[in-house]
Length: 407
Image (cartoon, rainbow, N blue to C red; front, side, top):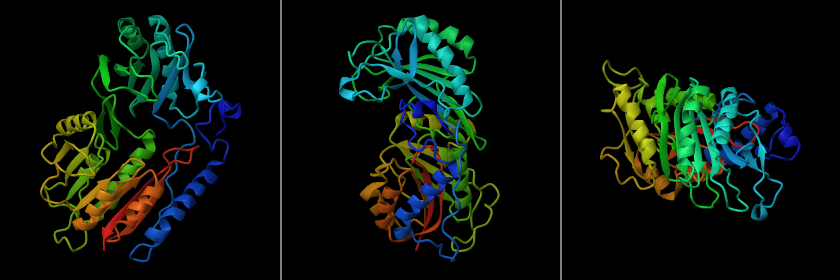
């Protein structure tokens, strides 16, 4: 893949742009293994190779979310980024229009003209970071696997909210698949994408994100992996690996909207004798899941999914901090899945897992350095399988999934 904005120095979001994709993938695999082999080893307990081959992505058209800074004028808005060639402290507010960015899924690119037309129709004045004037800071678009859209306008105040609201019917006519339309308030002058207050303008409360047949619900401020195809592969892989264990109950820490939790709840693997080989669940028996997440919006969305699927009795979600586990159920699970931010699970949770006696841990990490550090604090676990998934081609970012077993 090649990008004219990268070649012109207008955008540096993709530092690996122009590097052959096979080379990118091999380099990521080598880098991750260099960090992890010293603590995880290179072979599984049965003597087989620990690492499976990496899961590739398409090189372009894979992003389901566009986070666009709005610059220019209401009559001629630019949707993209601030010009990186200017000094941040003395930025004049000009930007680079990235509506033609090759990373976005095609349906996102097709929606940009209608969004720009709304800005012009409503007279929304783009925010100028240099002068700290104007109203519209960002537009954020998310595309569901079935083509639904969530469109969010991040504004500084409600001064032009009525004007924006008046243009929503025209936006819905231009984009009939716009299922969620909101405004988000970010009054402060700071480097943030969004503020805490969301104002519903039209459509549903959540965007339905169906992965592997499971209809997840995404609220406006909820987190979802930006590469739909690789996210589906990640959840399916976790399900496959846990299916080979005797786990009948799982805690999903850092659960978000339940991507891992619902996938694992649908897996049918169990052993009549927990010490014996895994086999099919007895008739009428299914795996139970408890999820923990700091975001109330994400937990509310996960509960909607559990209710819609009719599994709220065995798939439950709680708002809380995974590093504290203050609200955890009394009985420990057979397995835990963790999907922390880049900082990893940290000392408290790693030490708790080490002393818990829980048999299996599925660790999904976007930072092999913190994964290696956390593994170093859990010597009581040995890796059974590991695999890199390329969530972010053209960058050095990735996801690593590792299945751990109590020694």
